[in-house]
Image (cartoon, rainbow, N blue to C red; front, side, top):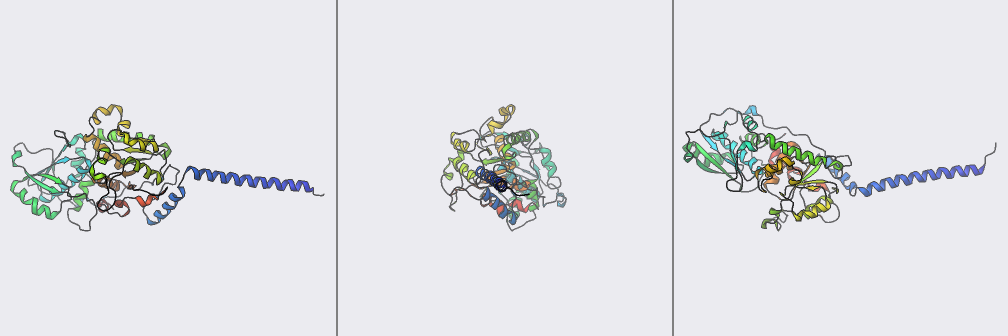
Length: 420
């Protein structure tokens, strides 16, 4: 049977057309993906590089940005069973002041002092920045959790005995991260004389870095800083509802969101207008944050929470680039606004911001300082280590890994010495 040459030619042409069509579909498909996700190659390359260093693993899902996979929560290195009961010889009183980033450090110093001198710790009150702005500890924090966590370390009471006069209380200044030598030389002699002292913590510098020097009080400080403070149920419920609201708004990012500590009134202060003595910037504006986040790979659908109390027109530039940008007034449950948004400088608002930044998927400190340092500590304690320090970026893109906080990349935060 003869072969028809025309049928052979037609068959070859048909096969060639199918091969060409297949190549066109495949090429168009990948070209369209690359166009939708600019910088995807850089993010992938960076994730491989960092994974080899054992630092981070990026999400393999297409989630609108360089999100990290959640890390495992580290285990505390301290053990409560190692603490021996101490007989109380007097009382230590103190107040929590200036906001939750200070509360964490003030609690740690008070517990270390009380433990060292063998005193009973009196539950502190909470004082705001304005005169007369005072709250009870239980209005914000969980008293039962606080007392229970310190069993065997120091005894805690709600108030001084009725027969004790306030005039008998001696005020003692305490530097943050107080040393045992300072307690022995400056505090214990006063306590022996008065048996009742009031601590006034001051902060010579913002220093939360890990040190090579160790002392017997390290475990006490770690427990006090990371194992004592929890929000009381109502406040915790408000924070949880706001987080849930942001996750609902972040469906294109797999429920993830960024928290940015950016407060306009601080940006306007003199210390934020220039570079620091080291030549690095200590504050970044809304426009600078927007450009930074875009250049390291976050898409326009990324959800952002700002610590700014109320919306300010200077934030519009950030919302233009990232439309899903919110302050607490727009996501706080309606029935809670009267109580928790009563004033722009309320303790409730500060606490909400601190815990929102501690629990977000990514934290970006637009302002350096103790807020950044102690939020970093809480994030390290919970395994949420994606903290990105902003910078001026030349060019159109940048590696996200090169902007990890030194607290994470160098593991130089004191929290790293508290967890294993």
